[in-house]
Amino acid sequence: MTMTEFMYYLIAVLSLFNFGRVLAMLLGSDYYDIKQARKAHRNKKSEPYQPLISIIIPAYNEEMGVIRTIESVRKSTYHNYEIIVVDDGSKDNTASMVREYIRGLTRHHTTGYLARRARSGLLRRRFVHVPDDKKRTVLVSQRNGGKGAALNNGIKNYAKGDLVMVVDADSLVHRKAVERMVAHFRDPNIMAAASNVKVIPSKTVLGAAQRIEYLVSYRMKRSLTALGMEYIIGGVGSTFRRSMLLECNLYDTDTMTEDIDLTLKLIKRYGNKQFKVHYAADALTYTEHVLSFRSLVKQRYRWKFGRFQSLLKNRSLMFSNRKEYSRQLTWYQLPYALFGEFVLLLEPILVAYILVVTLQYLDVTSMLWVYTIVSSFVLLMMLGEDSESFRSKVGMSMILPFVYFLMYILTAVEFLALIKSIRMSKTLFSKERQEGSWEHVERSGKPLTLPV
Image (cartoon, rainbow, N blue to C red; front, side, top):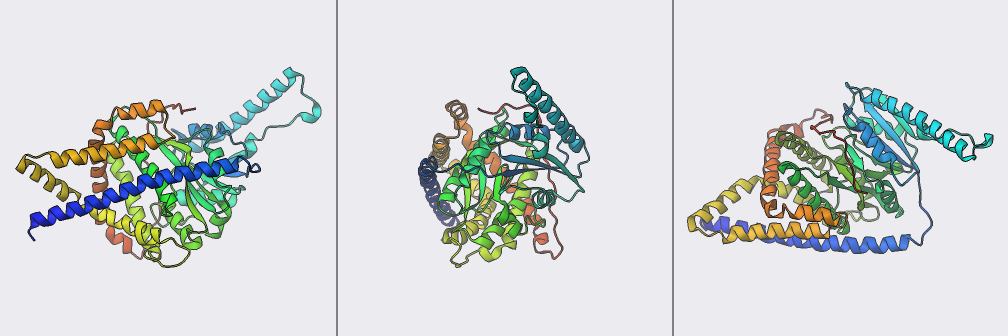
C-alpha cells in the first residue's frame, strides 16, 4: 500500500467514524429532550421540592466581576439559598468590595423593608425583623491555597445546604437557573449536574467562535447524559449533593482541573449506573469569552493537561468491567478522550494532505462536502437548542457560512494546547505533588444584561 492510499483510507475511516459519532450525538440529544419533557410533566404533579442550596463563589483577584456575579445569584427566582463567597487571599480589592457590598445590601434592604411596611400601615412591633440577606450572604477569607482549597473550605466549614452549586466569580447565572437546577435533583439518583453554559455574545471573531463552540459542545452533553457517558461536571453552576462530596473528601488539589477530577472521583466511588452524572440543559449560566488568542491557548492548555492528569489519576476506570460503571463510559468515552487527542495531533498532516490533493487535481468537491457537512451539523445543533431564542438563532445563522473557518481557529488553539501538554508530559508521571492553582484569563468586566 502506497502512502497516498494509506492517507486516503485513514481519512475515509476517520470521516466515517466521526459521521457515526455525530449521528449518535444528534439522536441522543433528541432522546434527552423527550426524556426530560416527560420527567418535567411528572414533576408538576409532585410535592414541592425546595431544599436549601449553598452557592459557593470562589474568588481570587476578582474585583472586576465578583459583585455582578453575586447580584445575578440574588436575582434568582429560587429563594431557599445561601451565598458563600470564599476569598482565596486576593491581592486586589475583592474582599473589601464584597464586605462593603454585604454591609450596604443589608442596610439598604433593612431600611427599605421597614419603610415600606410603615407606609403601608402593616408595621407592628411583633412583625419587625431584619431580613436574612446578611445571614445568607457571607464572606470567608483565607490564605491563598488555590481554587480547590477555597471550595473545600466553603463546603466543609460553612455550607449548610443539601445541594452545593459552584459559581465562578467572573460569571453569571440566569434568574431561573438555580430553581431549574434544584428541580433536577428531585431525582434522588442524580449526584452531580452541569449547567448549560452560554458565551455572552460579542462582535469579535474569537468571541463568535467560542459562542458556537459552547453551543455545540453543550448540546452534545445531552447525548452524553442520555447515553450514560458524561464524566465532566465543570464550569459555572456545577451542582452536587453535599453529603456525597463530604463522603468523597471533597475536591483534591493535585490537578489543574479540580472539577474533572472530582467528577471522576464521584464516579469511581458511586458508579454511574445507579447514581447519575447529569446535564441540566434548562439551567442557564453565562460566561464571557476569552479575549485574546494567546489567553485562549493558555486556558485550553489548563483544561487539556488537567484532563490528562485526571484520567491518569483515575485510570482504573478505563476499560473497567465493574457492574456499577456503564460500558459506554469505560470502554468508549474515556478511551475516546485520549484517541481524540491522537487524531488532533495528526490534524495538520491530514489537512495538508487534503489541500495538496485539492490543488493537484483542482477538485474542490471533497472540501465542499466537508464544509457542507460541518455547517449542516452546526445548523442542526443550533435549531435544536431550545435554550436559544429565535432572535439569537437568527443572529448566529448570520455567521453560519463562516462556521467551518471559525472551527479551524479553535482547532489551532487546541493543537497548540496539546503540543504544550506533550512538552509538559514528564510532570504527569512525576512523584512530586502537583498543586492546582488559579489560572486567570482577561475578561472585559463590563456591565451585562442577561435574557429574561
